[in-house]
Image 1: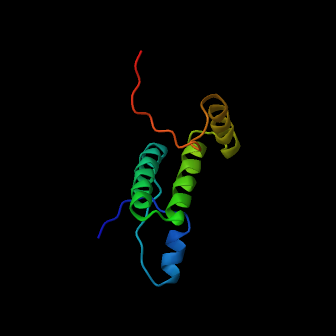
Image 2 (image 1 turned 30 degrees about the vertical axis):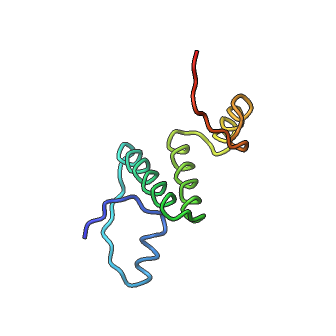
Image 3 (image 1 turned 135 degrees about the horizontal axis):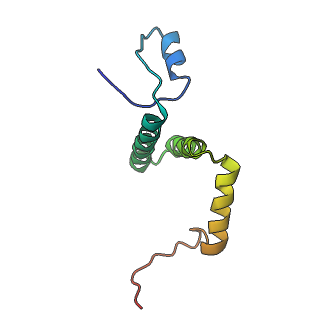
Length: 102
């Protein structure tokens, strides 16, 4: 069975401790970005299906990895989030847009 999917850094070590034999490789930066995005979609789908906090945490980990790939620190990403929070607000009021006209 071929997986060809991005896994967390310690997965090979954990699997080997369980007696599994894995075949892995280190991808280049271009493939890494593509696989991170695919992993994000996978984890979002899993969260939507399960509503699990574990999956929500996985999404956050991938977001942080994508930020690092784009050479942005977690703090800088949070600063961007904070600025948008100040200008556009959050999602606390549960507002649903029905229609917009000009």
